[in-house]
Image 1 (spheres, rainbow, N blue to C red):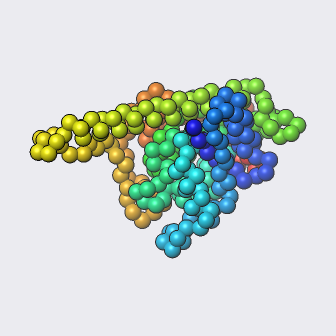
Image 2 (cartoon, rainbow, N blue to C red):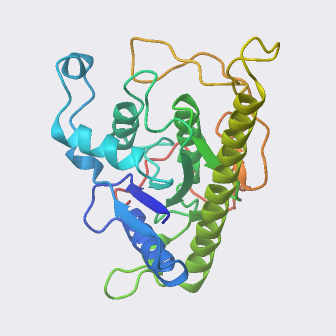
Image 3 (cartoon, rainbow, N blue to C red):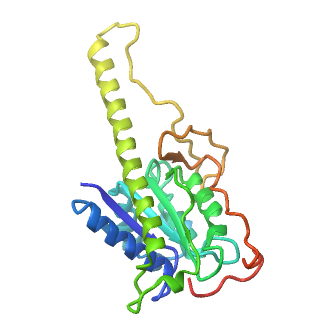
Length: 268
């Protein structure tokens, strides 16, 4: 059973990003009823503090890490605050990037989307989010950017995102996410079979004996929630895109789009 964790980068009760993820939940429920979908409430996490981590994390942090570690994929929807991801989302990723060498984000499939009442749909925050996921060594889904413009106008009277255009875009991203999960699982299965075959064929004293290691394994440094050394670029394979690749291009600015330097609406 595929398990998907949804993370909204907005804490607002009537958040359009949270509404987008509720639509994702409904889409998965209709198209893949065997899948499990849960939400991670990042507002419960304390501010990252290395001293706190050194003395033992809080129950909320431990629960968040366990939830992500047990997931096949994450789907993150972010607003854009002054051209960047909200601090609460950055804080959550900082916690999830730890402990060093055992982050639950490493190798995890992650799909990214954004929503905003503005004319750019929050897309200016997406490159920064891809950069954060890159530092956390996550594997992002290869898909044209999903940035829902005028999102508040796409909600019905109950506050649910039922607009046809938005739902189609979300459904396509869901499909790409599940395909990415399937591809990554097939790759892991192939590696396991290779390891088993080498063990079977390598006896005592065999010239080629010894464990087989995948190339390009994760590199870690100690002392902080985010690693910043240069990482090798992993080639895309189908819908799977290594986070080390280029961030998705922002769409061309429309004549009526707000300036990037303008303060983002609080309705996120």
